Image 1 (cartoon, rainbow, N blue to C red):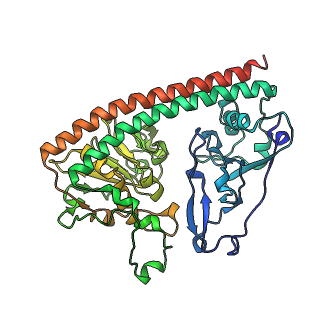
Image 2: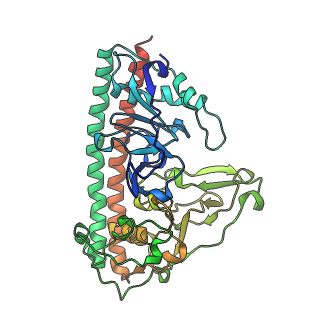
Image 3: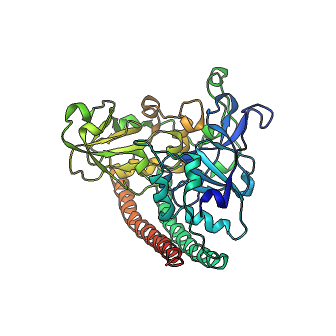
Length: 420
């Protein structure tokens, strides 16, 4: 059936007036929705800095579907506690079911399946950021077996989700051991994040920026007055190149922030493009360089990775900070120190910008972040722990994704079988 004949798109909007929320409002933007897993996050945004797209009111059990690059599967179901929140107009909001014999949980999963995602792409238009119109969303065809079959298919997904969640939790234990080791070696007490803190803020700091407590959440009780700026440990690249101008007919490799998953253990994807197709200016990177995504949300997602061995000249997005370690520093030490909750919050507190989704960490602010001296023997101990635990975490994450892909394939095949 046509999706538009199954469920109605909501059009409840907010005029961005002050009466509904006050000085800040809770917001869900497209980048806050996970791909294929139904996870999403919210943020508080100052009313005076409200993005123009922040207008859709969402309700409990609404299904939100990103209409920008919809084939990626940024699809989620709104939780009870987020009823009445504001979402981007870049979502199609599916609300009221028009027919009885459909389970909403089944509908969510079939929307995230390749059966539907391929239709989203086919019905989209545009270049690097293809988009689909609300009318074309309605025209997507949804396989709709009997309700009893839908419920059996949901159980397949639910079982797989439970197993996947368990594997990922095990992987996080190994990653947590890395953080605990580093914090103990740095002498940082990270438990004070649970306490209430008070901050003095200059009036001029409030002129262009909202007062957001998340920016002041770093562990202020630790004494790092004797630490040196991190610029004493790493060199920060500032020069950029344009592949389309330097070598337009040569193949380049290209590392993009969007191709790196949250909390990555490495670089998931490196694209290969002809120089003339890589428009703009980028950082040229080398093996061993540390790439730190400097946008506020990507700092919270710990998108910090090390460049692997490279096959050809490689560029990285200008939204990275590119760090090249001094000869007596291991890249793993820098990366996993910066990935700790302590440094995540400290870097976020140094970001600048009008709204949380647009906060950026400037290179000049980053280079003054305090960093301790770590003896080579301690660094070696950290690196040994990092490499061992990453291998274990990678294995568990791989097993989790294989379980999930197997469940998705079974789900899709059984859906298709219903119509053979």
